[in-house]
Amino acid sequence: MANKHKQNSKIPQTYDTTISAAYVDEIRRKLRESSSKENAAQLRKSIKSDVDLYGVNHTDTHKIGLDCVRKLRSDGLAQTLHIADQLYQSHKHEEALIGAQLVGALSRLITASDFEKVSHWVDHVFSPQTADSLAISCYSACLAAKPSLVKTMREWARSENPYKRRTAIASFNPLVREGRFLTDALEVAEILMSDNDIDVQRGVGVMLLEATRLQPDRVITFLASWKDSLSSTIQSIATSKLRPDQKNQLREK
Image (cartoon, rainbow, N blue to C red; front, side, top):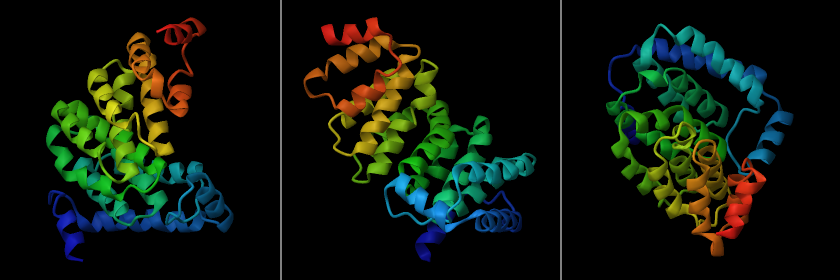
């Protein structure tokens, strides 16, 4: 209980706890009403890990989150962060996805100082899906606002938690897609290129795939430097959008 209080203290007291409780209760009620044992079985099979979940498919989970996003627009970022904080600490799969969705809708408002309020959420990721949603919706915006956080991403990439490692690399996806932060992203990728976890390999592959949209030559050169020990998973995903002539460049390097 003391630990939970310590985590909550990282969120600034500029929100209404009654409002947060009402939103969280509504989200949980809707998730319970939309859940089924069949969906729970399918989700566990797709996630491939024993996670705590309601059993709501991703489409319905997104709709529940979207309804909350619409209502929260006028309540501001601090209120949204507090609601998301409650959702992340529940360790429920669908609640974590909605938490990321809520923050993502206001990511344009995230500033450099906000990372301190949300950094502990990474310790509540427990699947590739929750890692990616948090990384893309929240931590990417934090990186854009405070580039020195690249150091933290390098630290996370060395974590014993594979989902924390995946979060580190996935945080660069929206940025490299726009042609930014690729040098930093490749530094983090270097740490993970020999990672044995398949979900981490897929995360690296997706980041490199996003980078090929605007900077394919740099990705090709990077992959060529790992040619003798390149994971087939990383290579398959990273090169999936390259033209045949670009793939030939990689073979020739």
